Length: 270
Ligand code: KIV
Image 1 (cartoon, rainbow, N blue to C red):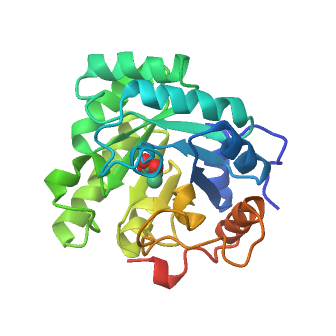
Image 2 (cartoon, rainbow, N blue to C red; image 1 turned 135 degrees about the vertical axis):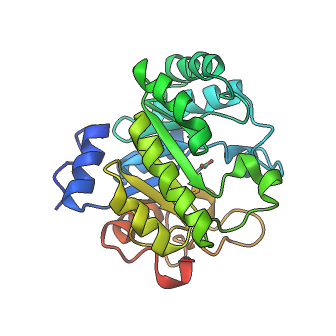
């Protein structure tokens, strides 16, 4: 049994303790109060109000058009529904390209959007920004591997860090983000061996999506794991609705599968 109960609020310290104790962290995205409440009831530890909402809520082709006001709106909706899970809100594309912008916009996400942690994409180039946000009392979640906001630079939604040099750079990026004060790290579409090495190299909790079983926790986009995202389901996701009679049961099955290590299975990994 994990050392925290379903009554106690999840904090950064809770997640650090879970990492130390080897208790897996369950995380899902949500964008509205009803789903956030349901996730909270099912024992999801972390809710990411991701800019993936641009694709799964707004039907856009990428996350790039999502605005700060939209993130604030959805963050505030989730904050009204979720009382226990830690809420991480994405900083949208180009809202943190300078320290000044990052501070101003992260402050709005916290004040108006109910963020308890802000998430931003990138490695070495983010170190100064992570340092300055942290120094102002704003907890930051880093995001390495596949960076959806850089999809045009990356040339598509592809696994990252397969080559030795890229893998080494990602490990150094993770260390740099931690040294700058990052509280959490998301690793997206990364070979399982590399995410294991990164997870072991840092003390901040690492949450994987398509990053193998050895991260400290797992995250999926809610619509993907409910099997309602139009088109092909990503390789790293699983339809947890299959065989269940309610969304609540599907989310509980996901939480259980993350906690007991049965998700992700080898077929979900790179
Ligand atoms: O935008 C998003 O939803 C995310 C999670 C999948 C980690 O970044």
